[in-house]
Image (tube, rainbow, N blue to C red; front, top):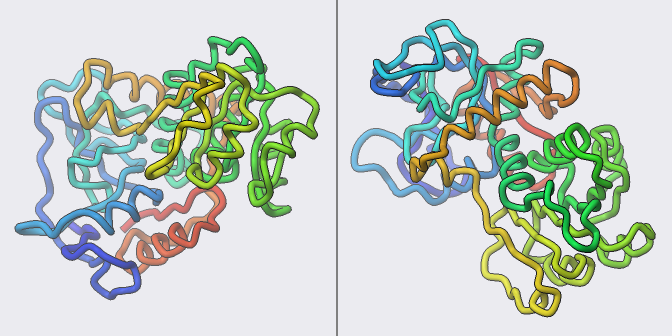
Length: 337
């Protein structure tokens, strides 16, 4: 089958950074679904993996997490899906990725695709949806208010992939006051359209802008981008006994400024459940199926902003370059081989 892979990790400007290759078609066993891929989206996690995955002893590293497609075959232990079902999901970091004609995925992290949108629109959703949902409801526990600012949340990077879903979930499922950051007129309008009540500029000091809103200190902060550089401002603006969840790779950070406020820091990645095969890994499939209903009811919309073309090495190299520019809005999608 056709796939896009690489051998040597490194920068995207090399001709061999991503290659069109032929690999064996996998076979579904156990709880795996074999999915015929119709569309994929590209995330910062894809670009990070391309730089860090070691050269394989044989074959190729195949990237890709987000996908939407049709179930081609099912393993003998599959319980919730049948051949022909339309599905969407985000894979895991310890198995070959979705940049291939066919892909194996454990049924427990798969959701039934929203019926009212295309495969391209659906492929934009899974990874960011899971990251936003788990960060908000599992880690920050926004349904359990903080003593101060318990109805106010700041989403840093609201126009990015995770932020655009987080803002929509907050608006659809809570009555919280949502502050989002953006830095251009276009992204400002985008996050406002998605449901943010207030928008501030993350290229300027955050604390003073939040204070100027006169709505009190937020009890919750979801930081999706640039966490390390924003930490001093977040420490200044967050309410005492508040909660912070960073979902980007923040690197080494100084947590001391949060100490006197007793702010809890919730380290997080949405890959934990599938990577460690946790007893509750089926929660991810449940989340995706629940969000599919929200999409079909018109309460959440796809965040796809650019469909670049077919799934091949040339187009994926362009997508990775755009992701690494740090200037993307929403999600980049590719469809079909």
